[in-house]
Amino acid sequence: MAADGGERAGLGTDEAVRAMLLHMPRVIGRLKRTPLPERLRSARLAPRHLSLLAYLLFDGPMGVGELAERLEVAPTTVSLMVSDLSRQGVLDRRADPADRRRAIVALTEEPATREAIERWLANGSAAWRKAFEPLTPAERALFVRTMQTYEDEAARGDLPGA
Image 1 (cartoon, rainbow, N blue to C red):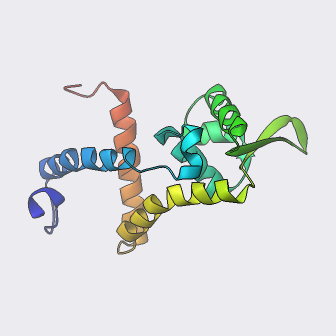
Image 2 (cartoon, one colour):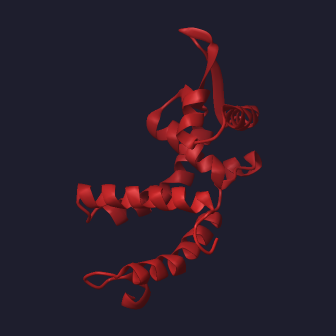
């Protein structure tokens, strides 16, 4: 595994790039093949819904604007996703009692649907927990920052050779 997994004491930049370029397609493929629980199959959920549902599961109900900010998409995009998932019984959308113009989005209270959402997210959560457990808090933070930087740079699309 040292040749592509990097289990040696350290990796040079080129070795690390090679390891990640070989590893990431397998990770992405596995994510795409993660089956939806039966209860959610009719909802036509896609990987983009995973982050939205994870925010609501981990952080609780929030406004459309806050979700858009966290997901780094336009509020209209979130609003369309929320409307679609609300019609399908996956999310609840209600007016904020403090400001009736503001919509608050939450996971449905329906137990079978909520349990299905938790099951869909559980495998990824358990895998990350196992990966992060042996790391120090500083190492975890470094990994998260590294992934954020990779995403930002890959999204730019103006890198050499792109």
